[in-house]
Image (cartoon, rainbow, N blue to C red; front, top):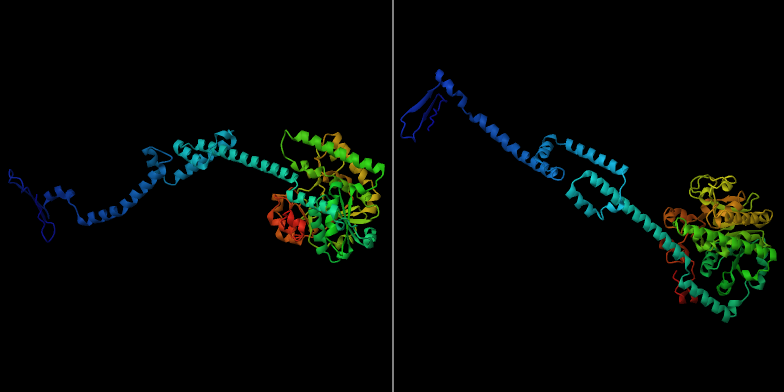
Length: 531
């Protein structure tokens, strides 16, 4: 077939079958006014038409190919049919909306439904592998819920175990502290200087001088007592006015006396007395004995009730709940019959500022002065209200006290002993102990503070909250304390199980306590007590 095109334009097209021997015919179509040319007008092809079409297709086809490839890959997980892929190709963004709606519906069904924790995936990789195989959104939602529920249960169990371990760790006496007591007791037996009178005779009159600043510690921990005394003296503007009264039990008396007899804190004065040295009346002895027995029975009842249930309130089972030293603080007027005003310090505190202002504090006729756990407003004491310590579901509590009332804190307290003697605080304390025992520990959990809140109700004057920072022995509570407030506090209190002399004590706070440990002392070094 041959085409002949004239240079002046397409006027004539000659078609010949030159390759065919059996036909000598030529077909000639003449245009330019010839009506016969209209027969072939539909078969004409213009280069000006073909070239733009080819160019447009060359540009669009790569984009179409890439779009199809992406949609096929995206559709592989959610659909396996060509209809699905074609629908996604033409609908585009609507697929993501439908997928979102389906996933939301599946999650809502899982949220309302019940799942078995054992049906959850063991790991994220296991969850992904299973979902790729099943490709079921509803199954994915329920499997995820079961997995999260299983993990939450494990976390709660781990927290409970941690609380139990901390509770057990707070029970023990570190070997280093036990070593220190033994070494000091031996020193008391062989060294006359360790048995010397405290205070020396020329300072004996200071023990009852009302113009001096009297501080009281009830403790059987020699190392802790030494830190309290040392930190108070070093940060005092007038250390010569300080008089420390340390009361301990019979087993610790020799060690405590030996320490302060061989480690002077001049110009301050220290008195060490054992409970066996008190000559109390028979009435007083029987009252103390009865209080101890009541506390022991309360603790036993609570323990028997809780040991098969949960470990929700391990603080109530701590040894301090039964400590004789902690319980005797309610007999402060009897312990110091010749004193008028004292500052009471727990043995797990560190004094960082001068405390002279406490003896000048006007208590407005009330028995005690204490810090209320209120860091924001006067009426804000989150976690430290009466309802946090007492059981207001019991009518005996709800009819006598206000649950929204803020509770005060032990650790650093001012007591007007003369005002105390004019009240029945001690008798009220003992009365409510018996009531709690009678009602099977239904009024409050074992502890020193709850009955003290009742006995001192309306008799405690607030002290500036910046004077005391507490809870340094609790992990989560201590993390909420800012560095600025910690440094500005006059006294910091390691309340909680993580005492600074224990291995579970927090290193970031232990340095605040250990800086006052006398690391140059030979017994401290021999017993490997690290500051």
